[in-house]
Image (cartoon, rainbow, N blue to C red):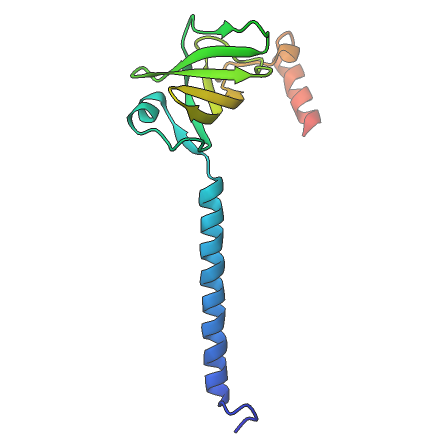
Length: 152
């Protein structure tokens, strides 16, 4: 017998059980932390049908409705509507908008719902497959490929 009073087989069993409990605990802790930091994605109709709790960080995606972008008097705040064809959500954003942010384009706004208005902290503009950066629009295809190859 060992000096601790447990046979080697029982010591291994205790060690395996302890390791499993530690792994399960670590997994639960990680899942809890991720659930608190997760940013859920909504489209306007989902946001209207099932709004998140107040102050929860979410992402709102859809199309910027044509004719809906209005600049405020401060020059940095804009109001616009995001639509998915079924519902509209008014959005307010203070800051510099991405170059690709225009009416009729796709947008993902990161922020929170305050009343009926979505207050965005960040805007991500989407572009279609035909998008070419301003700096590259006058280049030939071979020149553009060379520039891309050099940046990799």
